[in-house]
Amino acid sequence: DQGFAPAEKMIGLMYAVATDVPNNYVLARAWLQKPGLQDETQVLNTLGTLYWQGIGVEVDADKAIKYLRKAADAGFAGAQANLGVIYYEGKLAPRDLKESARWFQLAADQGNSRAIYNLGVMYRDGQGVPRDDSEAFHLFQRDAEKNRYTPAQNNLGAMYYRGQGVPKDPVLAYMWVSLAADAGFEPSRKLLQKIGEGMTPDQISEAKQKAQDWTKAHGH
Image 1 (cartoon, rainbow, N blue to C red):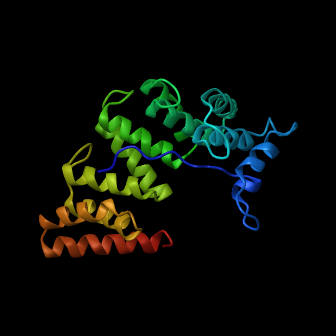
Image 2 (cartoon, rainbow, N blue to C red; image 1 turned 30 degrees about the vertical axis):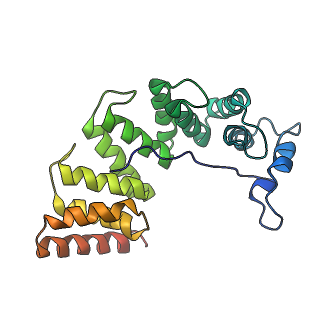
């Protein structure tokens, strides 16, 4: 199963996501820093991300955290998730897994997909929070079902496969991992093959049918 998700590169506004002109992050930064925009949480998150990732500007830890923290304190889930990544990685700021988990929890409470997933990884691995396979399972399940996040679908299947936080169920394991694989999540392909090696043809057929039914029911 998969570990920590990479940072969301939420660049967002104006030149940062322009479709009719080449991306110009220097102009984006200059525009976003104009007076009157500094109370917009999406703007603050975008500015923080530019300084965090060093896009169109030198990496600046102080400015990145200042902007992201202001947006996060105002309740912007994307900024809360970004701070969770920063404190988890320990590159822009000293590594603090408890602080990372705290920010992920705040973002997850608002439905942020990667925050839910990353919090699940932390509960599964006992990082910054007590290890809790059941909580990890429910977080992956929530993200897999509601947000259709493929790494969460993969990890949900892996937990069914191992019986981690839930009774073993090879059919559901195969179903969830196949959904992730079919959506293009490459790491799922190897796991799917491994799960299938221990299943009967009837079990595999049942799992494939469940995956088809789930896809049909969820509009894919």
